[in-house]
Amino acid sequence: MATVTSTRIESIDLLKGLVMILMALDHVRDYFHYSAFFFDPADPTQTTLPLFFTRWVTHFCAPAFSFLAGLSAFMAGKRRTRIELSDFLLKRGLWLIFVELTIVGFAWSFDVEFRSYGLRVIWSLGVSMIILAGLIYLPRVYILIFSLLLICCHNLFDNIHYPGNIFWDLVHEQSAYQVTKNTQLVIGYPFVPWIAVMPLGYYFGAFYDKNFDSNKRKKLFNCIGGIAILVFILLRLTNFYGDPTPFIDYGNFSQNLMSFLNPNKYPPSFLYLLMTLGATILFLANTEKFKGKIVDIFATFGRAPFFYYILHLYLIHILAIIFAELSGFGWQKLILSTWIGLEPNMQGYGFSLWVVYAVWIAVILMLYPLCKMFDQYKRAHKEIWWLSYL
Image (tube, rainbow, N blue to C red; front, top):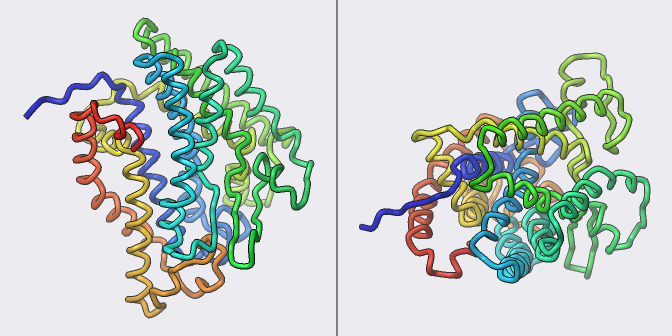
């Protein structure tokens, strides 16, 4: 058997893997916890600390993965010409949008009639790749300016609304449209400022050049990440700028903490991205020398993210159908006509938080050997071009 060698940076795969594992927790909660059908788990007036942090810890997933996708694109560009990289990003972006509307959409609903189409995280990654396919022709400093302008300034448009304007909602406002009598379009991830996060990661890719000193990179990343977190704290405490959902003083520590740590995600506010990307950059700064079996387990998921993403959605939904039937709720109600949290037939279904964690662990354990086999196959068969799309 041939030995598979790799020059991949383990800390990047480690973070990708951690993100994918945490993401599964959020999706298990969507399908198994009773609160998903009654209230927002991040609402300080209704939630509990354990439930809030179950939701909060997954806030880091989408920003981190989008940032890392940009960083990985820069590294992939070292093995391709600029035209080849642009072509790859364009094709992969279109592919991801197609997958969102078909394979992923069906995984969420199991509805053969496709009564609801959701534009969620995979869609946002696809659009971001298409935008990045054009941006890579610009000097790096222009890519940085584009990214920072959108990330820092898009909240200036929070009070601008065009009710019923699908084009504006695709850009900057979460909404739902009844396209036909039986077909709904849910815009879960407006593409601003997501299209700036991936190019920002692309800009950071140059810091991983082999000629860039790793100690210097650690200091730089700690400085950038630390400043981002500090600015988040200052702006959040003062409610000066950067989030349409202000920090509220409820008069007690628990609710104040939850309010403070709950910036707006849809679309992600400036403060949301400061909090999540700041932590992402700090993580990258301080994990490059991490080694061992645990790191390898996490990194395995990080080397097969798309493969894992598709499998985990189908597995979670299948398990939810089994649980619904065994609990007497009925499996038929898990055939969804809309987003699960909006499905009126789901009220009365759901389990305690400990069940969510038990199912989450089971999902990870079941998927690990499959991801490991796929990772090994993919690294041993780099000549198979279509594997780069998985």
